[in-house]
Amino acid sequence: MDTHFYLIGVDGGGTGTRVVLGDAQGRELASAASGPSGLALGVERAWQSIEAASADAFARAGLALDWSRCVVGCGLAGVNNRDWLAAFRDKAPAIAGLAVESDAYTTLLGAHGGAPGVVVAIGTGSIAASLDHAGACRIAGGYGYPTADEAGGVWFGLRIIVHAQRALDGRAPLDDLARALLDRVGARDRDSLVVWLCSANQTAYASLAPVVLAHRDHPVAARLLAEAGEQIEQMATALNPDGSLPVALCGGLSVPLREFVPAGLQARLRAPLSDSAHGALQLAQREAVKVFPTGA
Image (cartoon, rainbow, N blue to C red; front, side, top):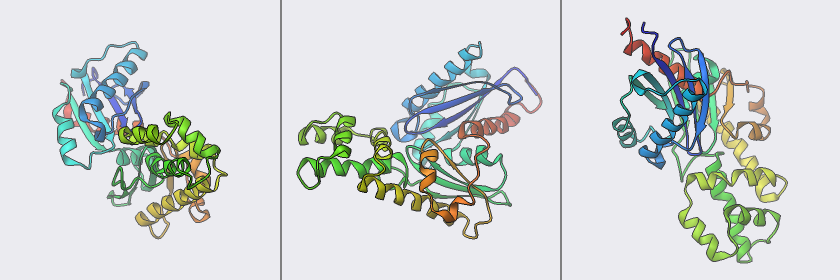
């Protein structure tokens, strides 16, 4: 096999992009991060973020980015929309090879090393995936903003901002939680909050999740956190009703939300072996075998 190419694993969501750079054998050389590359925010923006993070990773490894020598594996939010996926492929630079799957699948690869298991990935959005002993992958959730993403940052943001709305017009007290939300979005009154609401995208709503966690003892936040734990359990159970597979929580909100997962699921939780970006690196390695089967 040609040894003069590089593997790039990409984990792209609505809040940020993480890239792992590997050599032809999959040995990690460097990693980097950049802005969002979830396809819902546009394929041009996605490729801009991927290129920025890739160039940074190459620079950290003392190398220059040359797309023609790169095989890229991407785990991206939004690939279930086939129009977005087609547009993403069409906008790809002149790379040696490209494999694109959902970020749920690459999270699954990373978390269990390709072995059977369940993941519930919770970041800007949320999705659950399972790999059974026959190698079949199943998905639960992941229907996306604004109707789904249960327990994800967007889900929290859409619900918690209602407390600020109610506080501004007297339906709820203007308490510490309401003030923290208004400070986070830069609103002073009803009109300025409406301006924020009219321009807010999924990234903006997800930015409110830390406010919920910081005010976990507030009744409104506490109810949301408890519901998030129940939603995580429901997704895992839908994919593995008999509870026979290990479950890994992954993504940026997985650590703070773990304590809110119901006790029945707690016993099945296992720490992920690696993350979605490393799962995407495995995807790139598989693709490289097709691109460089006998060497260049």
